[in-house]
Amino acid sequence: MDGAAEALREAADGLDAAALGAELHAQVRALYPLCRSITGEGVRQSLRLLQGLAPIALHEVPSGTAVLDWVVPKEWTLRSARLLGPDGQVVADAARLNLEVLNYSAPFRGMVSLEELEPHLHSLPEAPALVPYRTSYYREEWGFCLPHAVRSALRPGRYGVEIDTTLAEGSLTYGEAVVPGATDEEVLISTHVCHPSLANDNCAGMAMVAVLARIVGALRPRRTHRFLFVPGTIGAITWLARNRERTARVAGGLVAACVGDAGRLTYKRSRRGTADVDRAALHVLRHAGVDHDVRDFTPYGYDERQYCSPGFDLPVGSLTRTPYGEYPEYHTSGDTPALVRPESMVDTLRRYLEVLEVLEGNGTWVNTAPFGEPQLGRRGLYGSVGGKSHARAEQMAMLWVLNLSDGRHSLLDVAERSGLRFTEVRRAARALEGAGLLVAPR
Image 1 (cartoon, one colour):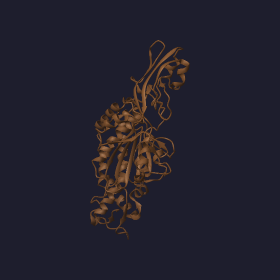
Image 2: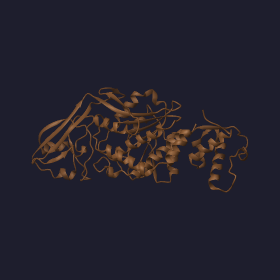
Image 3: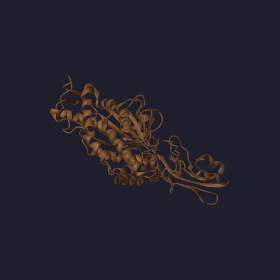
Image 4: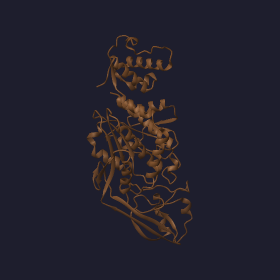
C-alpha cells in the first residue's frame, strides 16, 4: 500500500540539491520576464514553458462564463505602454519592466497635464527606489507604476501617454497535471500563475510545483494527485465552479507561493485546523530540524481562502517561506531572481515531498494479535545485536504501532503520540504486516 509513500521518502532524501537548485532557478529566470495577468498570452506562454517539466494540460474558459459568484473577465493583451515626459524623455516603459504599466490597464493615448496624470500613477513613498505591482482587474482604468523617487521629480508640463492594450472577449487559461491514483481520493497542490515579473511571488512556486508534479508523476500513488496552475482568485474559483463534484474527493492539499526566499518555512493551517494535511505539515516541520512558523487560518491570503470557503471547506493549507507581504521586496521590482535562492527552493520542495509521504502513507491498521505483546524475536523483527540506537528506534516504532493499531488510530496518530518520525512508524507497520501481525487498511 505504501510503495508510493516510500518512493516519496526516497525522493525527498535523494534530492541532488546542487543540480535541482540550478534547474529550478533556471526556470525562475525563464519565467520572470513574461508579462502574466489573470488572463492572456503571458499565462499561456508560462504554462507552455512549464510543460517542459511536467505534462500540464491547458484549459480555456471563455470570457463571460459564470463561475460561482463571479464572471470570467475579458482577456487582456499588452502590446506596449510608455509614459513620455515634457522633454520627450521616457518616464515609464513596460518594455523594460512589465511592472511599469498598471496590470490590466485599459488602453489610452493622449497628452495630459501632470495634474491630470497624477491619479494614474502608483509609487511607494516608503520604498522610493522600487516599482510597485498594481492591478486594475475589475475596473477599467489606465495607469503606470514607477519609483517614488522618479515620481517626486516630475515637473509640470504635458506628458505623452501611449498605452496600447486590448480588453476583449477571449478566455481564462489554467493548467492541470493529474497523476492517477488507485482510489478516487485526491491530493490537491495549487499555485498561482498570474503575477508578472515577480520571482519569488510566484515564478518560484510555479517552477517548484511543476517539478513536484514531475516527481510524483513517476510513481503509482494510492491517491490521485492533482497539480493546479491557476490565475489567483478567479482561477481557483473557476476550477472550483467546474469541479464541484470532484471537490468532495479532496483528502488534503497545499497552496504553494513564495517558496524561494531565504526566510523560514511557514505553514498556514486549513480552515478546519486539524485536518490530516495540517497535522502532516506540522509533523514534517517539527522533525525537519529547521526554524519554522505555524499560523492559524485566516480568510485572507492566496487561494487557500477559495478552497477553504465555507461551502467547500476543503482541507487545504499553505506551505510557504516568508508569507505574503512580510518581506520588503513583496509586490515590487525588488522581487527579482536574485531574491530566490536555489537551496531554499530545494528545501521547500523536500518538505512538500515529506508532507505528501505522510498523506500517502497514512492509514488505520489493525493488530491481528492484540492480546499481550506478540513475540517479535522469533519472527525476525528484533535485531540480533542489542544496544544499537537505530535498532531501538525500530523496536519502539513496532511496539507503538502494535499498541495503537486498534482500528481507531492512524499511523499519524502513532507518530504524534510516540514522538517518532512518520517514516519510522510507516516502515514498522510494513514490517509487521509482512510478519502477519497487522492488517493493512483497505
